Image (cartoon, rainbow, N blue to C red; front, side, top):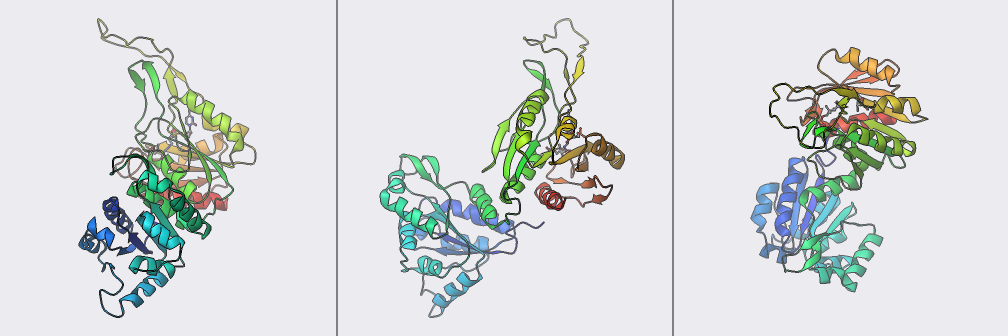
Length: 398
Ligand code: PMT
């Protein structure tokens, strides 16, 4: 599946706030994802960032004034409005919010917006008192009632020295919500339980047994499901990844911790996807103090088996779709098929691990889907985000 914003016409409206510098990065991210981005700036925005920066990054003329380019410039705004697939206003100041809520059209951006029929996303950013003022809140409510999307500002220290809500969210988060608003909601009403990352099994307070899972594949599945309207719970082992928007995050450490979390949430799930790399074994004993190396030249650690969470899910499942992953270094088909049957799965994603382009910690993955009915579907190497969408497409067909 292509990135949802690839080849889409996005108009980025920039109004005059200190956070305008972040819209440069937002533009860069959208262009990187293949979007065709046009920028309209208010007069005040030019105090913060020059139009040339936006022009260079978008590769398109930047609109700064209704009449600056001659008589037909205003017609061009109407064309842009008709061609836009989405509009993002970031930062949206109290001034532009007030104008849009009241239908005022007195500059290029506000005039353009009145002609827009596609989804519009506003990212308010201003001083906290201004943001919390009755007038701004009333205008935001009115814009929501008009069907526009509003991304709440972050809280924290603001450029004006005060602390509170009003900070423009990070560009990655704005892009994430843009993709959310544009994605089809074919998982609406479905509850998904996804697991991700490794588990850690302690030997002593400073050492553990684990594996190289980064969590990227499991997070990609949870993120894709959320974008498509699913109600997602993600149970994850330790990773360096940021929490996902609009996803219930449960963090665990050990296989036993993951088992408890999974079993207490499985009943409510329609679809369970187990991407986590669970340690099959744990040290039989964990010492309370750090094991000292004094006089020990060989250390023997006895391991005992962890619960096989997926197998138990396969035993307990009722009218639920159960999907596993198989991490293999050889005989992908044979080992994946065996797990598919033994764990009573509907589908297993077999992937070869230990290659730079596939498996642990890679950005891409090379997988083959093995279905319960015996069919198999080899997939090309693709971004983990894209594989997640293909997997969800197939699950919806089951
Ligand atoms: O996190 P990344 O860096 O992005 O890497 C992604 C990945 C390689 C971890 C992922 O694509 C993957 O292959 N996940 C499954 C890893 C694994 O544990 O495979 P397995 O073949 O050992 O286990 C088969 C299935 O049983 C898995 O769904 C696993 O979650 C489950 N299992 C395994 C052991 C156990 N004790 N309990 C389980 O539930």
